[in-house]
Amino acid sequence: MTPAFEVLEPGLLTTIQDGGRFGFGHLGVPRSGACDPWSLAVANLLVGNEPDHAALELTVAGPTLRALRSCVVGLAGTDLGATVHGGRGLATGRSHALAAGEVVAFPGTANAVGARAYVALPGGVDVPDVLGSRSTCLTARFGGLDGRPLRAGDRLASDRDPGDAPDGLVWIHDHDPEPIAEAPIRVLPGPDAGLLDRLAAIHWTVATASDRMGLRLEGPAVPMPGEPGDRRPHGVVPGTIQLPPDGLPIVLLADAQPTGGYPVPAVTISADLHRLGQLRPGMRLRLLAVDVRTAEAARREQAAAFRQGRARLAELAGWDDLWRSARG
Image 1 (cartoon, helix red, strand yellow):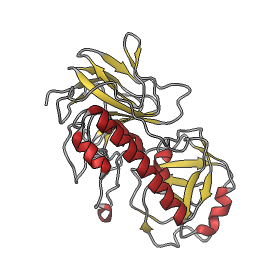
Image 2 (cartoon, one colour; image 1 turned 90 degrees about the horizontal axis):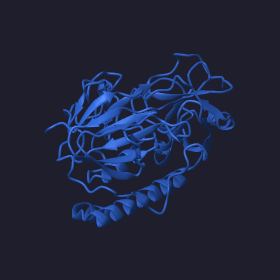
Image 3 (cartoon, helix red, strand yellow; image 1 turned 180 degrees about the vertical axis):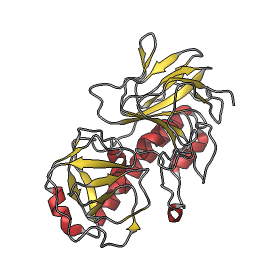
Image 4 (cartoon, rainbow, N blue to C red; image 1 turned 180 degrees about the horizontal axis):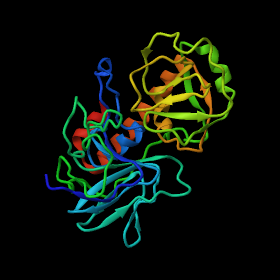
């Protein structure tokens, strides 16, 4: 495919991510994929893709891109101030047409409510499939573009004609996800649930050392029971909350290792994983213990909202295949 974009400036951390890499945890391979899977899916649906297609994940301050041909992009996630040179703003939660030669920048904004935005191209970003995924695994340096973030001079192609999607589509549904920084992160008790009450009583702050592997939290240290190293390694997944010897929790994200040995007081419910991916350094975080019934209800509610938004887009754009899938 002819490239759709040239990267003029790469931004703070811009990678190619899709729905994730599954089935290789026993080999030590992280899941990777989007830190905010909800926003990845919305960006993709805005240009007629399946929800897990490869797109750009932008972090705090995004790239500057030049359109090499006419194309349509789907934007979702936090508003990083996307602006076409000349002054035209591009709102998040919409699809936008770009003419050949136009330059769009994502400089970040002081009042951004989250950490990450997603840019989707029709058909998905065209990079090689590695172990069933096109996601960039930064820790192991494979996937995406040679396992690294974007850099100046990179060219990005799509799997479909990049102009093959209507512009001006808007993501609309009747239930918004919980506000990123207001409602607590809901968690299920883990194997070391005796520590959860103490963790839930603290207003934590996301540390600057956080990355795609996990959110490091700052606050009063919670003493860890036992001696470091006296536990057997065990499996972990994104959303797992670990308590290392310093007593400051780590909340695992998409690039986390598949095994760990620290105590696990709790695991984030699936419906709140997207909110973890939007927390940025300096934001406050609280934990709220819930039961399995509440977690399942939240997952069903989120899935229903997603189907509703997908169906509305499909009907508006005339995407019969998406319309049938949304109703099914």
